[in-house]
Length: 331
Image (tube, rainbow, N blue to C red; front, side, top):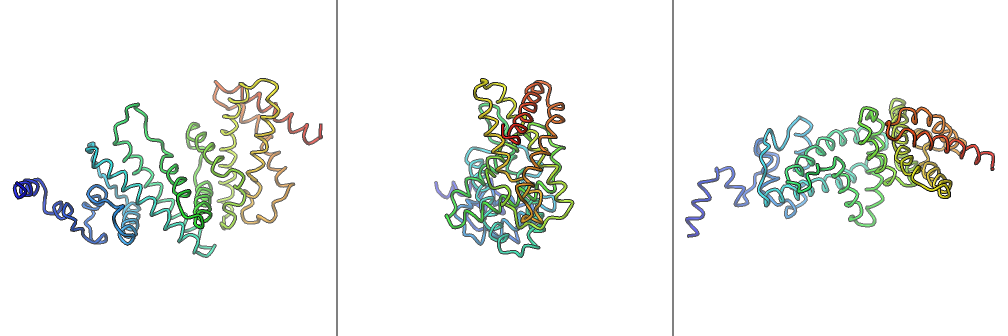
């Protein structure tokens, strides 16, 4: 019966698939491109050594940069066992990529870090799409679409799971990567819901440490201009969410709410973020200047807010401006 089972299994598998089934894997670098995805659906990568994971991360990154997709044009669903293995392997490779690239980043001279981040972000954005495709293949009972930020939720968890001594470097790597992305991506091209979710996530992730998180990055003038534009684009939609909360509060709780929100914005130290090449020049005057610029933008932002929330945003804008004047005059 065992022999018959082997013969029957062999009849269903090509020779190329058979060697994978029995664990006779090729070298990663010599794996044909049309068989490269076998590593994701036929091999349990959690049980493989770091050398194989290193080779896979490097090979996948190289091929992704050349336009390769592990799924090609295939759209058929997988059985539960294969789908589960695929998800575990994608997560394992992503974790390994994050740890190894973070280590490389922190061992580079400052002048090489920006170029390195650019290369990694090009690849990781392609990988985000792969990650979304993988999880979209799992049927959802609720009909919900996989979040475009699902991968980054896992990265937060991987930072927490790392050795205590590694966590600060991993955290700073992630912050530097996000800051560099904000220097190159035009967020005004993204829809408002995406910007709102991104703003909330960044506010939570950077709580109280934005100004120092990417302080060593050597940014160019064009980078800083884009960073300023994106920083204000995110504050704009972050305040939209706050306006929705503000109008629901009773009068007695509104001033303390404004205190908390202004404190949050000040804790971001936007003056340091927007003066990356000269962080030592950031001062209390710079902080006040940035806050003043924010307050001056409030009316414009309120007037172009989505119609259902425009009145709420206009109210918050007026209240914030009055609040700021009172604080400045110590009233």
